[in-house]
Every structure is written in structure tokens, then in C-alpha cells.
Length: 412
Image 1 (cartoon, helix red, strand yellow):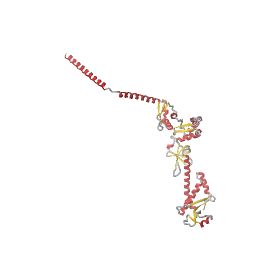
Image 2: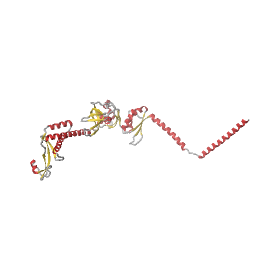
Image 3: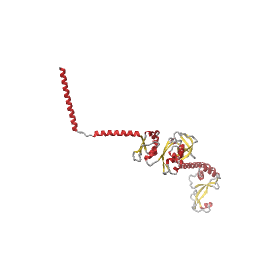
Image 4: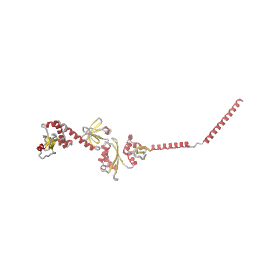
């Protein structure tokens, strides 16, 4: 046996406190490393019956070989005679197993050198697995981190035991990420690598708004108010649809809070991003009207009953058209994402012009169809032709008579 003392156990306890690696994992790693060093020292490739045993009371560790008690030994590496086994344990019988210490002399130094790399690798693996399991549980949740640095347009955020990456597409436009500042991020994905797990976080994900509302609005956490849908353009504007399961609780008022205290806290966390709180409704017309707010709506026409298409025509007053569409179409675009309906917005004047143009075209087509469908009478046409020919003959006779009179007047 090799005397290692209590220093090993103290080191294991310290690693457990600092890195969260259990003491049992470290001791098992040490035993495995000792077995690997023994096989290398003895030039043994495969020895399933070799194991290392650590006695925590005495602080000693050694290599042992497990052998089966038999009458006639055929394989000395795995078998032992009953007579030899009796010297180790008087109570052994045939087919019992005994453990025989095979620790070589002067093995402590060799074992330490060989075990160093194995133990280090095991510690790294255990640490990586702990971090991986921890952040797999945090995937899809909100966490707080500290900005470390910016590399190649990626923001590196420390979120505890590892650094997470926030790609440019998950950042808020025009936001300045200063190293040292605390930031609330959404754990988007966790990827396993050969080193530490790679954690991808987002500062622009719609779930951040949802998590903030759940933290600030007790009615949402209690299930009285329910968030039905969220549409967000990070850094600019967010629309959130809420619904109250209690008729006595106003869903919008609960989210705003007394004197706007709740919504102001959320807006401040989102760097003054504008938030529209919309009352959800099972009626698509009412839901669309609420989603278009703050613009006033004259009418909403459902263009089709197909659940997959979901087309709707919204008519607003002339002075509300730009407000309903929003800057660069932002308001109607967010309303589409929020409701799932394809929304076409037109003003009252545009609708009147289209209706007028539609009626004119209809009358013109109706008149044309009447001319085309009028019946043709062949006898009537023939009489018109004959009458026209007779008139031409009469006109020609009158012309000849007039010419003759002019000739006579000239001769006189």
C-alpha cells in the first residue's frame, strides 16, 4: 500500500467547493489513474481483475488483483489455489474470490507521474459535464451576466462558470455593450464541445420581454393573467397580447401597474423600448382591432374562412393611415406577427375610390354585353342596303341634270 495521508482528501474537498466536482468523482479518478499506471508499468494490456482501493481511514492506496479460488490452478493471473487462499483468509472456499495486493515496490513515484495527466483530464471532463448539465437546465430561461469584451462583433458575457457568446444577430441594434456592465440575457442554446460547453445567449429574444413581465407582474406568475403572444423588434417596439382568466382582473391594467410602475420598470430594463400592451380576444376581428392600436379602426373584413390563409382587410380613417401602418410598416408588421393574420390596411378614401372605380367598370361591361347580345335581323339589314342604294341613284340623277343646265347657260 502507498501512504498518501490526508492531504489528498483536503484537496478533494477544496475542489468540490470551488468547482463543484464531487469528492467521489476525484477519488474514482485517482483509482483509475493508478490502475492505468500499473498496467503500463507491468506491460499489461488487458486486466479486468485489476483495481485500485483507497482506504480513507488509513490514507493508503494500493493495487489489488481479484482471483478465484480453485483446486487446480490453470491461469495464475486469475486463479489461486485453496491452500494459498487460506493463507490470506482462513474462511475462503472453492469458487470464492479473494483480493491480493500486487502494488509494486517503488511504485509511488511512477504512479504519481502517470496518474497526473489522467486525473487532470478527469477533472476537466467532470467540470465540463457539470457546466453542461447546469446550462442545459437553464436553456430557455433568463439569466444575468457581466459583459467581458467584444470580439469580432460578438459580445462575450460571463454568466457564472463559463463565458457565453452573444452573436451580432442576437444584439439590440444601436446598443453599446460596455465591458463590466451587468446585462440580462436569454439562454438560447447550449452546444457541447471538446472543451467547455459553448453557450449562446440573446439580448433581443422576445422571451426576454415575457420573463420580465413574469418577474414584475404577480398576476402573470400566479396564472391569473396569461401572455398569449409576443411580437418584438428589439430596440424599437414590442407588442404583447395578454388575457385575464378572472373577469374582475383587468389584464392590461395589471401589466401597467399602479401609476405605470410595472411597465416603467420593464421599459427601463429594455433601454426605453416602446411596449404596446394589447388585450387578447378569441374573436379575430376584435383581436385585430386591438393589435392595430394605437390607430383607430373603422372596420375589419375577414377575407377568407381558411384557417391557414387568414387574410383580413382593415379600414382606418384617412388621418390614421400612417399611424396604423407605422414607420416603415412596423406597426402592421408587428400586428401580423402578434395575431398570425395577414393584415391589409386601407384608408376610407382609398376604399371609396376603389368602389367608384369598380362600379364604373361594371356599368361599362354591362352596356357592352347588351350590344353584343342584341339579336340581328337579316331582312331589316337588306332593306337598309336597298334604300341606301336607291338614294345614291337619285343623287346621281340630280347631279347630271344640274350639269346639263350649267352647260346650256354657258352656250348662251
